[in-house]
Image (cartoon, rainbow, N blue to C red; front, side, top):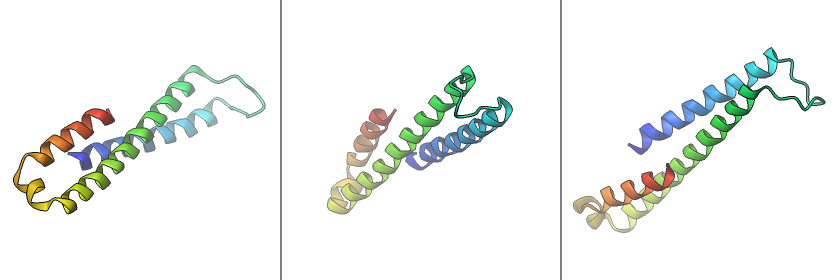
Length: 93
């Protein structure tokens, strides 16, 4: 589940970054002007959100592997993995 959500967040980030570049080319945006088109700011927000979400998912990968390595029997035989992953996904969103 973490892998799918990380992949989707990373893909959204790539798409938002591409839209950001297209927006700059279409609106003839120059850094000397401070007039941003409104859709450019929405794309920037989407890009930031997907970056934070994919970074959080990468952190969850690391924590999940650390817990699985520290307590392998308890992690794999109990519901500890489900509880930890559910809590992590809830906090990341």
